[in-house]
Image (tube, rainbow, N blue to C red; front, side):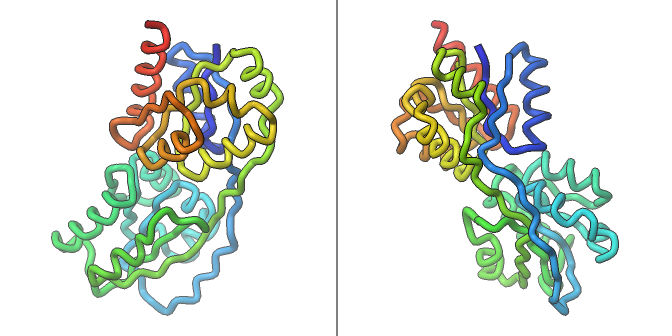
Amino acid sequence: MSILVTRPHPDNAATAENLRARGHVVLLAPALKFEPVAFHDESEAGYGAIIVTSANAIRAVAPQLRDLGLVELPLFAVGEHTASVAREFGFTEVITAGGDAASLRDKVMQSARDKRVSKKRTLLYLAGADLSRDLGGELGAEGFSVVTQTTYRMVPVKILPREVCEGFAAHGIEAVLHYSRRSARAFLEAARDEGVEISALAIPQCCLSETVAGVLRDAGASRVLVAATPDENALFDALERALRTRLA
C-alpha cells in the first residue's frame, strides 16, 4: 500500500524521503508545476525587508538575489521550510512565522513594534501569481508600504501518472497528502479526467490546513484529516491517525 504525495517538485522529494524513513511506500503525483516569472523590479524604493509565503518565490529569483542586493536584507518567511530555503540561498537574517500568511503578517507587525523593521522602509513581497489572501493589502492597512512582485506561477498538472491511476484502480493507495488549496483542486480535476475520482475520494485525505480540507470535503471526500498546525510534521501525524483509524 502506498501514500500518494501531491506536493510539487522539488519539495516532494524531501517529503518522499521522510515518508520512506517512516516505513511507507510512496507515489508522487505533483498536482502543480512550478514556473518562474521574469522579475523586473522598477520600484525606486529602498527596501527594508523581504516577505515570502513560499520557497518557490525565492527559487524563482535566485539568480538575481545577489546582484539586486536582496540577500543582504532581513527576510520574513512564512514557515520553517521556506526559511531553510532562504538560508540555502544566502539570507542570514531570516525571521520565521508560524506556517501561514496570517502568522506572517503578525510577525511583520510585531517586528515593527520591536524596531527590527521600520514602517518608513518599503517591504518587498515576493509572491506567486495566485494569492490566497491579500497580504500586501493587509499590511498596507496597518501603515506599511508594500511592493508586491509576482515571481512565479503554479500551473495545474492535468494528467496523473499511470502508476497512480493503476494504484487507485487496484485499491493500492491508502491515503493522499495535500499541501495547498490550488493543488487539491488540480488533483481533483486530474482524477476526474482520468476516471478515478471516486476511488481517490474513498480513501483518507490528509490536509495541511482547514482551507485545503474544505476543497476535499466539497468534492465529496468523507475521510478528511487536518494537520494540527500548518507544517509537514503535523501533516505526517494526521496521516498516522488516518492509518490507525483505517486498521482499527
